[in-house]
Image (cartoon, rainbow over all chains, first blue to last red; front, top):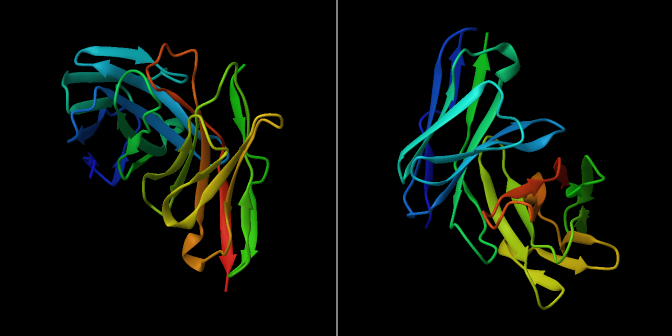
Length: 114
Length: 116
């Protein structure tokens, strides 16, 4: 079974803090993704990575950065957290090229910024 | 523009009745389509996908989906609903602009409520 784990299920941070969300997958997948999920908006892609040290902006990258130093680990960084970044954050992984490989998701981190 | 629409925010069904959760898509070329389910406070779980071939796709937990190219739809179905099927359901299509990186475009989600 593919396993994608996220470092925290719930997180409460203050405005202006630097926040790190960690994601680890154990299936040797090349692709990793960070989404945020908000009611009525579905999942929106923040960043994705297709290889170590490689990253691409998604649809809503503003206010976020990412890091992928090892294949199994993909970190999402909020440089200076703001209240409008309160959301559910989901990490996913998949095989890289070709076919139509489904994405596997972690349990999510519910972040509250006060 | 590529997109996925789930026209119903919520679907209510009595236990034992058939259920349908609707999805329509807009994408150039042949679509790769997916359904995911999200139980409360959990991540998304893959249910099924359509790539090519038979228009009726079978997936996990007794769910199936019917691909209809002329109507650009990929509705999720189950012959007999269970209370435990109550969850949030997402339809997704592979982003063909993404150079094969297997990015997905998700719909807004439909909440399914199955009543005893």
